[in-house]
Image (cartoon, rainbow, N blue to C red; front, side, top):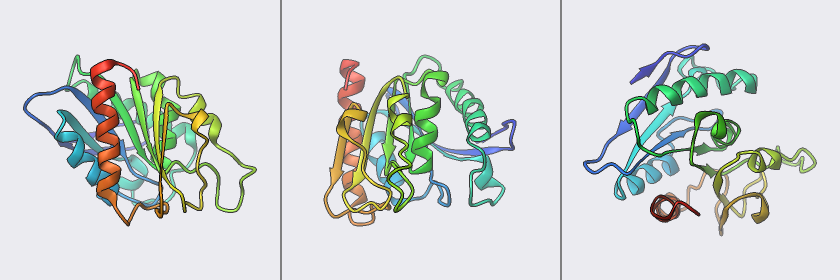
Length: 201
């Protein structure tokens, strides 16, 4: 599915299920794509609990760029594409998320797009070696419940539990979750399964 945005087209790969419970819109990091192992693992796990999963390649990656550019433009594009995907599934609760840079976008735009929760994978708390440049404010400003899943060896740091509705730190994992991406999918699906049944994290 191609979606026009003010900053170029985005492309969404959508996996549907028979009995729809909610819509999860996921995206990638700065230099990655929608086939990152953790994103695929989340898709596989969430589809099993009744989630429609849309993995979005943002406009800057469609253009072939490896850097997202100004946050304001990235967020403007995200708001349009999220609305476009949501329009296909009226009435379904919306959850959005992503890995690394994509997690930041999901947090920054959650309230504006009407998301009910955010899934933040490998949230980049600060640039490597620069803990004074914390991005924890983006988590706190999401306005909705945020699940953060990070590895304890992530050079971008690990957020504080107080800055999210739930923080899961996976031992031995780095920024890319290469050791056990299936575990990441399980953590996300378990949280969303409860969240979508009870309305709270």
